[in-house]
Length: 392
Image (cartoon, rainbow, N blue to C red; front, side):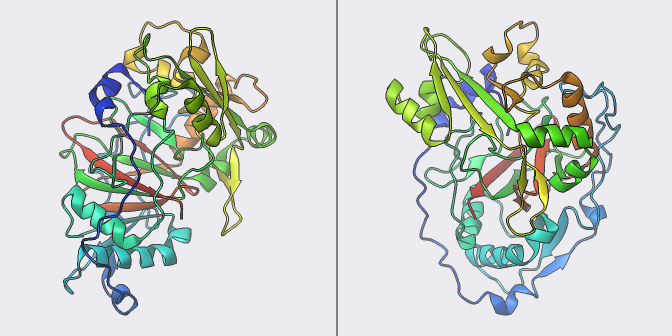
């Protein structure tokens, strides 16, 4: 989720990071009897059940860029009746987990375009293996995290089930769409709660509708970004000289030519400097049209990839580096700098559109990655959220 690699996160998780081909297990055979029961096992739950007991404060929040600036909201909003939609799963029919995954997917196909975020509560799922069984029942086309910007180790080998984030709990992760900096980004994202923080410990997941962000942005900002787009720049040093994620670990090879080919396959332009460090550049639109509704959507990682995000984190306190020497940075699509006031406006508007919900163990939420941005509030104690991504 987060767009930089801290020394701590990288060192703790690098040994898990090798991406392997996804092989589906054969347990929990999928039932074909789904349509007759799908309508009877889901019951919408009230928004109050999803709301945190105490609304998380946003303004002046530590390690959250823009929180002290103009227009930033004071608190994270509570869920509404329709966003996210909360659904209780009644499992009295004793369906297997893969069958329940199929039921959930049938519900998602009918409802997600309009609902955009659906949280399923009450599933008899407690482990990563249970989450895998659910995703197998959904039968989506998995996307792995190769080319991602942070350590995201697999929880289960060869499964496509990843840790959602490895960043320290004191960081609040800004709102973003997933993997907008590569050509093959996921269409659907599934988060599963393996362990939720205790009450009052934070860790809420904020969500924002991309269409809401578009409607609230200054029309001049929309116009300028619509014309210019966004350029993402990544800095991947050689592994011999840096605590950043090196290009050898990003592309799982020590061969420069092989790494370059893999980067180009993801749409990147590649440049090497005299030190053997790798720079990736990728230019993309700031907006997309939804393939079903045709709606204009905010779809990018302008703020989370901008170096001001990394500079706000404690690991980089006291650093004074050129912008392009941070792990990630963004420009307008023509290579010009994004003005500080524009970044502040985008951050303030995005957070003003966000709502947050509290996790319970076993919760599964499905997000339309085109329609919804997501993030993470800072937390204390333990929190473990898993993620699975699909192309369909």
